[in-house]
Image: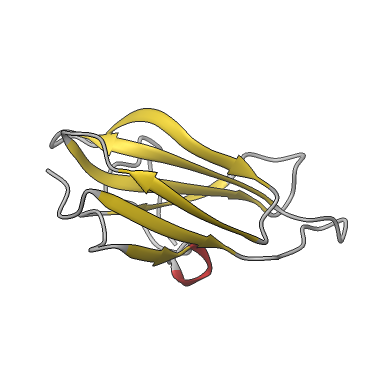
Length: 106
């Protein structure tokens, strides 16, 4: 269960491979197996958003598209942070707890 009833996220103003604003997406993680729930944010960065944390949420999944022609990078943040999260501080270059990709190593 979430440690906080509200979560604020700062989405950085970062560019992709075409020097365009990078696309970001946030989704809730549910249960002990990290099942992905509803999305709570989709945007091009340079934003500050506030979200009510739904009951049963165990974490968040942050996706970014440094190259929009390829699959996004993602990072799971478990448990839900106390109240604030900076998307730019999330570690994308590491094995994720709920990865479904075989041989998913960095």
